[in-house]
Amino acid sequence: MSRPDRREHGQIRALNCVLGQLSRTDGSAQFSSGSTSLLCGVYGPIEARLFEEKIDRAHVDVRLRPDIGLPTTKDKWAESAVRKTFERNILSHLHPRTLIQINLQVKEGDGGVDAAAINATSLALVDAGIPLKTMVAAACCAVRADGEIVADPTEEEARDALSIHTFAFSSTSPDDNPVYVDSRGSFTMEQYDKCYDLCAMTVQRILAFMRTAIEGK
Image (cartoon, rainbow, N blue to C red; front, side, top):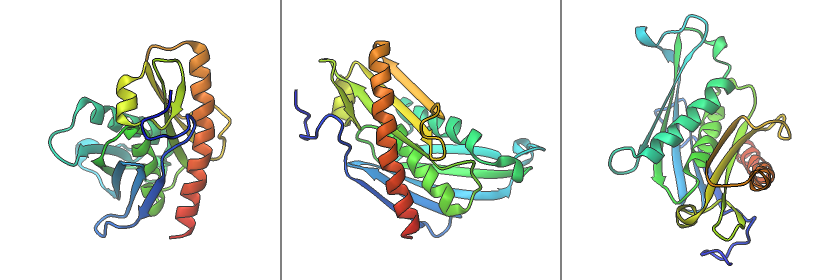
């Protein structure tokens, strides 16, 4: 069965990013995969409010909001994906008693929002000069009703899929265990393994794109 946009099963949508476009942040990035686009602004390290202070590390706060209206359950899920990924990846012990604020805005959500949010955040943190253990990138794939596995599904494909899988990998150890995994829906272990392999391969392409964008700024 062909895909609605005529892509091959393992083909991702066109990638685009812009670094440093927000003048009032310490770092920013807009990352797009096809029609899905997120803007991330990073502030910090800045002074933390008393209830946010941690004596041994910086407090990492993540907030994601849609372009219009109130956050949905999907938005909260993407926000959680970013928080879980970067709380472990930011070298927060270098800046105790401070705050690192990550603000994300969904400019357009057409599938793979959580992966795009991770990628936008990774680029914005680098742009802000926040120390990281490693660069991180994420990819999404879907198991369709016919059993075929497709990379970077659109919202339409995700809605009709049996399951959706998002994996994030580090740039230093891309063949090791992923730094973030989210699998939802009905799938077999064989399908899970195929999704893992497809996303790992896709992340390599995304990391190469991100490196080029950073070097070209």
